[in-house]
Length: 60
Image (tube, rainbow, N blue to C red; front, side):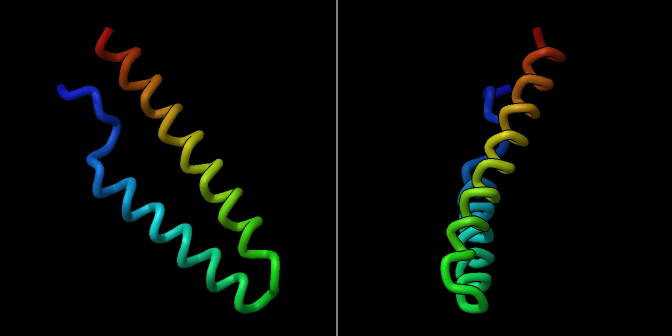
């Protein structure tokens, strides 16, 4: 196992999805896109960190 939680393309795809969602929300409500971007990035980071801890716990 390489130690990676996900392949790099998954991180790129999620970043693009968060950016598109933030852009769409910002078109409807100015300023709200930044909130969507911050919450999306925080949620994704928390998920990846939690999954990484679970994967390391299983393989240690």
